[in-house]
Length: 491
Image: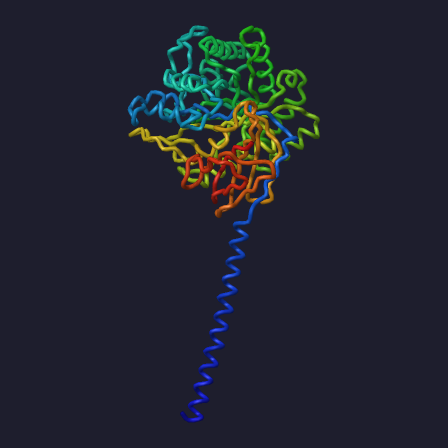
């Protein structure tokens, strides 16, 4: 080989060696960078439990029978060895094969389904019967489908039944309809001279159900009074003074009935924690008689940000107002049907927020069953073929309702990861610690329990699991699937 060729060959070899060295360096760096990222993603999350720091005692997790029970309660077509209506009842109320709700809200209709006096309510699901034949005369066979679902809730062991009215009876309203009329821009559709008849009706129905063995614990006579309710569904506006006045009136009437001494009147059922509700809070807090009658306030969490809830708490503190709080309605106010885990995480994070920021003792979902193109039902149904389709929301709510039973007490739980929300309870009967972990990351995370604490079982709701048991032996570390809700049962 000539010197020139030998020189060229050595140069090519040198370039090749240099190129290989650079490639190896890049590959090695890339490998270690990927390994570092994986380690970061899989880093163990430390859970801290402080059971000595305790907060509210839970009374129930529930949902409403509004708009669906009066139809679905009559679905006797079969699904397997059950009727469709019984399948839905099992999913909602059964602690073994369902999510074990511990409260249920039964809608006391204003009679829009009995007459043609509310023509602006065009959706049959949003109409409801009442129990009147004539004033003070009742037909208890009415609303039979909704009563069937109510009785199923009780048969499954629910001991916390709420009765709620969206509107006074049509015959008692100013416009003769079960919606509207924000007359002159500010006043209620219920005339003051009809307070007595409306209160009598609600209390008569409540007494009837209690005598029938239905464990009615709460009666809600007013629903979201700040809105105008001018059409589309049953509803009634009250200005702040009217709301306070009727709440005081029905409380006094309730107190006259020996059978209803333990009944709670649930008010104000305002639609959000601040903003449009602020004038109502001021009216309530400034009325001594109202405050003596109502040591607990029932509020809805619609349109309420974390900041709004913190602001509400600050308002209570600044005004030295000490009241218990219940959250009695919420759904994700978004168009489009959604059965996905994304919506289920939104629900779980909402529950976490209300439990930890507001110390609510009850958390109740809005309509348990939906036929709508909306982010609402825990279960979707098809009105044509009666197909029953559970949404992931059903199971993520079950991570709470199935395991946090009435009497459980919340205690302090912290975690060193801002993408994981946690809340813990001590079970009243077993003394076990129930810890719910919401993993908002798309990747798996590992939770490490503190020394002396072991998880005996774990149940996960994720894209691939519906409240599935994933741990059946003691462990001090538990893997949280990406985008999941996991319930840990600990010693």
